[in-house]
Image (cartoon, rainbow, N blue to C red; front, side, top):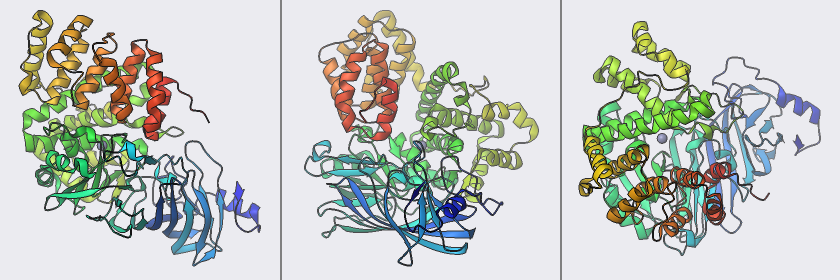
Length: 621
Ligand SMILES: [Zn+2]
């Protein structure tokens, strides 16, 4: 414990901060990844006034937080690495304490009001973020497309919001927000809120998010950005150099929103824009409300990776509207979103297209479950236990693809129409609320599945058991039959494939199956000669190609240079993991480490945490 304000009654304060909530009726589930005690005091609104300082790599400002209190003698917040200058109430200092530093959870903040509070309480926290705040990535101009201006973006999920904003940082707490953000002139700031469409001369921007959101959806980006509208409620933000092609790639977003609304009811967030980030962004997309953050690696020039937009858009219902109560319930966000994504893709691009996505999801799931059952079988449960662990550990095929296949099974049991009606009501009944696995299963049994059906689909085993039950639904993917035939022809006779008509997904199927069937070095050499996979400009295909070719010791003309360029320019974890893994598999630890040491400073912390573990890299402390 670190005493900050007045000397008076330190021991009393410590005691006050350690007592259990005085109100035993929790308004929220206790979250193992947050210090908040919402039964006593829950955050309902955030007013941010902040300045973005690129030179100091800091966000400096004041967070005015409104709490709804129930006899609260202490009010808890999360923080991690924040430098707290003072905490005031009505401009007067208030007593507060900083908890002990915890590597995973950061340091809790305990505000101690002069007397127990019931009702509204507003505290102003004057603070700055640390230069190494893990949510923030500060990019030098040369790391951007335009090369002339710096760039900042945030990634708050899962528990990183606390590294740039003091808040109750758990998905079960929701609040509205307003922000006033000052940035260097010539740059635009955008947030998960109402956004500007032009650069403000004075560098000051105002933002409003009127719908209550959890902290992991707090998001900010600052850079040389421009906006292009793509429809009545859709648009794209990107650096000017890539704005036009980004807007072309995502021109069908409005059609996706209409398909989504026809399935599960109105879009609740008014505007839906996309922000294309520099390539170091560690994820494919992040569903920040009103403004999805995106990797530029989905811009392929042929719209063949727009299923990612369908995914992020679907989160506007599953995740952002009805939210997993804790990270143990992550599959409620992601499994539903994969299901919804495929339904949007089927509506806009046809069932055949969606079936390809489904087959890829199934293949990835089987691979990952097999691996997991050897190493960490407990992690293959939908209802995962993450206490004491990084919630990022749940970001596996289990939450996404096992969750999705469980919902498919339910859909098959009751019929699509009945399931759609159920989901529409589910989203309506629980909008702007959070959901636990147990409450969802109770709701499912109450509203949709009788005991016999639950038994018949083996629901208990699916949700609370390990592994992949053998009643997992599998559909023959029609468009992949032609790919599989072409693969047989290639393997037996070295014949050419009709790849001119292939989408990215067909290539991914081909490369995946080729790996499964045990390709050899001369076959991959021939393949690269015919189809120039090393030179592909499609990052999905490149990463799948590297994962296949590297372990076979393929080192064709310029291959290693391309791999190195890829790993030093792209920071998306989905691609980094299999590529570095392939190098380890090839026994080429030195090659992996040489590239990693050069590339690491350009990766976001979310990616370096995973890669440090994978490669056994120990950063100098
Ligand atoms: Zn998602």
